[in-house]
Image 1: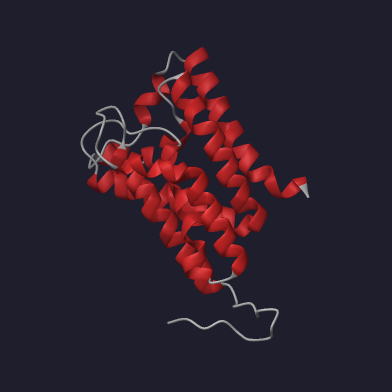
Image 2: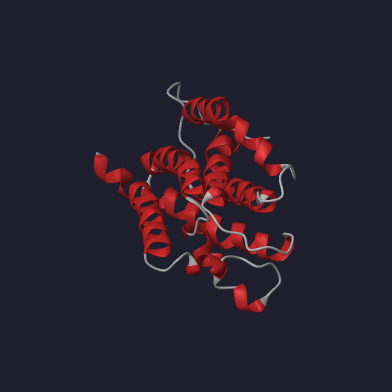
Length: 193
């Protein structure tokens, strides 16, 4: 059973390991390899930026939501976690690269918003009681995150947050389209509008 949660734990562990190596051994030099929008040389930053954090506080702020929301998705299936993770890194990072203001965007908060968007939108796409309960619990528990998509503070990548949120919703839509519809215990198949 615990095996299902290994990907979320490993992802969080990688963030911590990169932080310790980057800041303990390399003097923070890797942090410059994040996403610098519309600079071709920073395209690899799309892959690296979720694992880079500017400070210990930055990493700590991302750790618990990354672990909890990631574990919720892992509980639904490793395939769903992989789809959400890939969407968050590639699509969320790509949108940040295309549309964000010029700065070096780093941190796992884009993935946190991807995972939030994924879980919060499941009820809309899956239309099952379990998905509804999960989505409502996610919104009640982490709905305050949505303030992070507003341009409020200069050192906060609200563009990365918004890109991650969109990537999560699109991943939930894509995964839901590819999953067979389940029958209701009453024997009546769900219908969509």
